[in-house]
Image 1 (cartoon, rainbow, N blue to C red):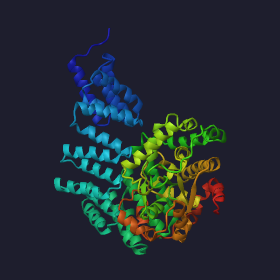
Image 2: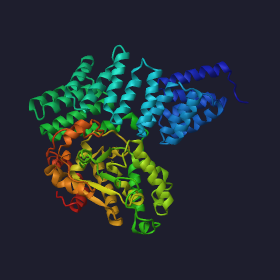
Image 3: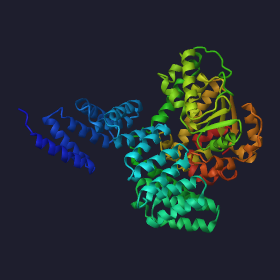
Image 4: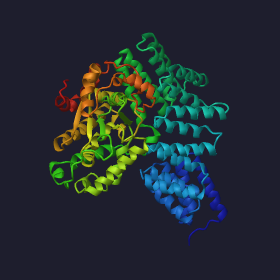
Length: 582
């Protein structure tokens, strides 16, 4: 005979478990839920609680099963559907998560957690308009809390809408008293991104007056001052002393990585190579430990590259169902253009140069091909059996994604700048045989070193850059795949070398414009002015491309040759193939 618990005892056990969960005592919360389920195996609240414990431990798959069982037993509980969506989101099941959030909205269209979590999902999916709409609803529901304003500002920043980010911050200032430190810090960071360095320093100093060791404010204050007084040796000494005086051991991973990133840049400018490399290493170590990365599949992107390397063979390409050639989409001004290359190969500079041309519209770092890939069952193998109907559908999806972002396909040459779309050039060729591909090339050692040094927004692909060895091996696999594509497919490619570009802009760019069927225009001569006027540079290179072209980044790796010695054998075949030297 099973032991019995009365309703009051079960209620107390659930309350106790909920308290443990809120305090982060996951094992205790799980024990409380488990004790109830031994008595009532179908108790929906206990199933939900145990699912939240699993979610807290990073086991989103188990969480989904438990919370789905709870949702089936109490389908009118809005928080259960939101948490089910969260478990699905954390597994990368975006479509399922959106359905769960939609169920929650139908139950309670004014439930704040719904808009918070769905907005986060939309932001992760790079659907920034949808994310901002959800965060604006959150502001409406919680006008006295800082979080919603900061979420909206973050999504606007990701979308390259920096002026909108400032607006959300100033709304927070109008409505919140006192003004939270985070708002001042975001204002400082946003002004610095816009090149408004006096305003950035002023807001950073307001934040530092409140908390002298605020990592975000310190980093922005230091970076803005470095940008104002380039190569000022005395300033660099001052900044380094100030930042090294912070006890980074007491900081969380997110804050510590910011300070290590800035210290590394200061040391690099000072020519202290050993210290710079050590700080870059610490930055990446802290990045690797970010709680937000707990559920990220660190092998996924690499595995996708390996799958493409395995699938794309001569036999595979010969098996492709023949399709008619296409010269240009009817009604479009030009064939589609894809600007690809390994990260840190000069693609952001090229983006600004091309976008300055009055007949060119560049879309920067937006996963426009992702929706196309998702529409293809069994990609990449399905490319072989693709017919005209499927190809037209895929093309239509891509045009639709571009139009949503404001592309003028009828009047402009539209360039999709997404460096790592280089791994999907086989897809591009199959769907857009008329495509023009601009390949950005830079010395492999400089690329790899720069990726290791860059404080990227961490995601599955960028996590390959957390060690110098990982960066080099990732470069090797991506460029091996690129070489396969060049061998197997009749691609329409024009190469731009970074080293040539910074030495002779017109000499390198004019042939590329001719390749695109465009005349030279003097506007492309000043990418820095265009970048400042554009004000929407979303990549980490924003501070470089808003200053005149400089040559100090060429051959930078030679200063770090001792640190890079272990990975040079990995890069040597690519160095030779591309005509560089070690």
